[in-house]
Length: 142
Image (cartoon, rainbow, N blue to C red; front, top):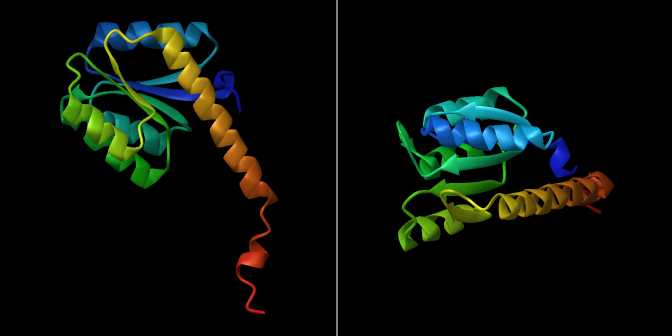
């Protein structure tokens, strides 16, 4: 799975930022789903084949951090958090949740693509490893 095969959720209440980032991602051939609130982001993940997310930290209806806690209860999706007011508390909580990175707005697009490519490579490697695993060995009582 490469970044080109990614289905990305971009969740941000700033319409200009969200549509600009989504347009850049689409121009790279990526499939993009958009949300403007924390709960919309969770609903998109429930309904769509999202496998990567970019979440704003501060959104209506809850933070991106809170939304991500709900998202990973549905399934694991790598995340980059973006924020206009980065601080150590946000960085610490994002790390605790397993975020790839917290980027200050406007984010470095080249860095975002590098992180996306790495995340997709890691997911593919994990899927290959799981496919090769013989689960019957795990449940053998002999």
